[in-house]
Image (spheres, rainbow, N blue to C red):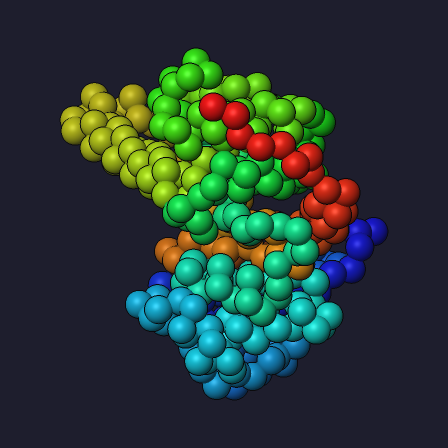
Length: 338
């Protein structure tokens, strides 16, 4: 029997909420009998669903944070929004984890301001599972911190390593710094400084990696600043979408191609599942008190289900507690040398 956990879910998060959220939550409850859900949202949405599903409790809220709103301002102003209330339930101990496919910026703000940052963590980071056809790898940061200091990346590497160990079972995950070349002296001054600190303070750091190494899954954890990481991630997602579309068009281009498509249909469907971000459900916000998973705004019901299940797994594996213990032990006070 798995550990029983309670996950708060934002019923109004995502482009297709609340319908796909409700469908995904129902699937998650069916898939894991030890998960309970606190569904946060308008009375007309959450109460009928909770009444018809075991292990689901309605938390009625009166506000919704829209995608276009200023994240931090909305979190401070809309204290009774489904997103903020969900994070507050974690802070108060009524839930152990929170999942939302709503505004990424608002999730980051609420996770940091409401759930709270782990003492000693300079900046929480948004990690993501890169859906490589080789194997899943972790990349962080992918959007929480556009501007970084080199020592932030040290903590990103440490937190990303914990996630890789606990969620994917990588015993000693290799860590690499995303850069424009493999040599130690490559890149901007920021990249060179970060390389020095990572070399000294992260035992599993193996050096620089280039963009081509990300999808090739050459390393287990790739660290970078949030600006670069977000561009890299969106490029991968966009390229995958275009390529799958082009393959589909080619297979439908003639009768002969259609016959060939029938022969490889099952294999391609399996590959599509492997490289789909829906498989992993969302990106963890590492460095906050409790599990916080942020789903893609366009999440479908499968992504919602997997996001809720992943949140529960992060709770059960004690990822936040391990990070807190690790940070409490302290880091070396190395300084940069040029």
